[in-house]
Length: 286
Ligand SMILES: [Ca+2]
Ligand SMILES: [Ca+2]
Image 1 (cartoon, protein in one colour):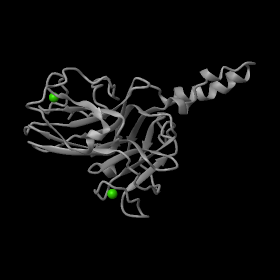
Image 2 (cartoon, rainbow, N blue to C red):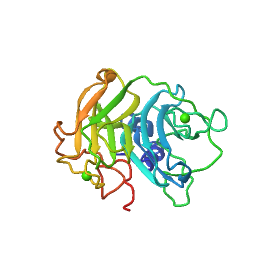
Image 3 (cartoon, rainbow, N blue to C red):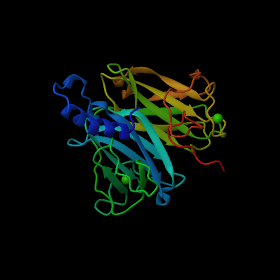
């Protein structure tokens, strides 16, 4: 939903409209912070990080609490995009993002605390593009880096163990979905992508600290079992049943040979019109 240019338009136009209205209808006023936004970014010229995982963390501005997380593990190519529909709710959040050069899953900004390359936008819904191509969500690798710290993680960790993989397996992409029952939204608050998961038969991944007790979550799992780069909904999409966030205190195992496929594509729409079920841009065809 809600690209930020639409949000900006709403935020800019609303005061203009109300200023020429004698009796303002305050109940119908909608600000950008009321709406939230998708979380997205288009990285270019990230060739220093082809073999690094890149982390994208939406955090509360004042308290540095984690709200949403994407991991591209790893870049493979220098130019990639991702989108997490409805990820950001109404509270103000910043976007911290960083390439994990040290490979430990935590941030140590170079040269202050280690070797990772890290950046920050103060408003995750209003990106600060630095590319020449005119795209408002475009970010080109640049130095110096912004010193950031690991967020506080209030939720449980999705620990997912895939089993039954063959040596043909291609990419794996996982969507942790928070079900906003009040607004009827599927918020993609966790996103994990790995293009080379090895030769099987198992593969494990983590999305740390996102599943809050008292809220509802499910997980969509795309497994390119035959390695053709395309997802077949009848055999390569799986869903971990919706449950309370407290259930994620335990690891989840999904055997792709014995689990029933979801049988339909997720409703989220990714950055590639050719493969909209993938929320991280697919690798270019060889
Ligand atoms: Ca690190
Ligand atoms: Ca496939």
